[in-house]
Image (cartoon, rainbow, N blue to C red; front, side):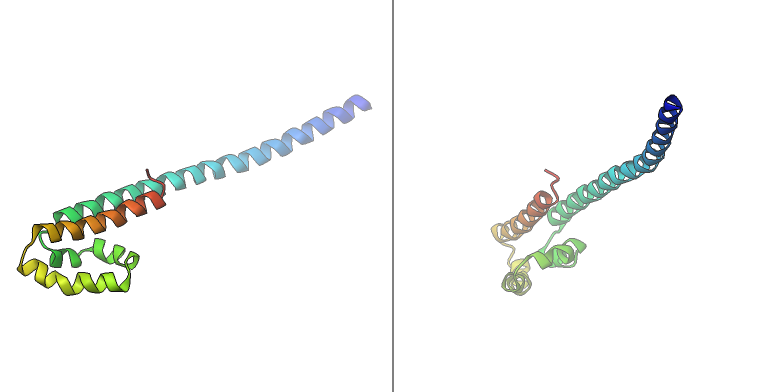
Length: 120
């Protein structure tokens, strides 16, 4: 009787652990794939932002990009006002240092976002 009880308990424990493992393993794999996909998307987003910042021939052109739209919420209202009011003078009087300063400011925000997303 004692041996039969041990065999029955072992069989039930094996059935329960097998069922749990068969349910947990796919869920764990799905979670890993979800994180991997999210990180890949974020890396591509960072790359796209950097390319648009560099590629824009003028600040006015950059203000029309999706990168500006996606990053503008990270700036204060005063800074956004300076960007939008001074882009006209920047583009009419193309001071390379001013353009570089604005581009550097946006690169700074992209770098912060990259750290926030723990991509570096």
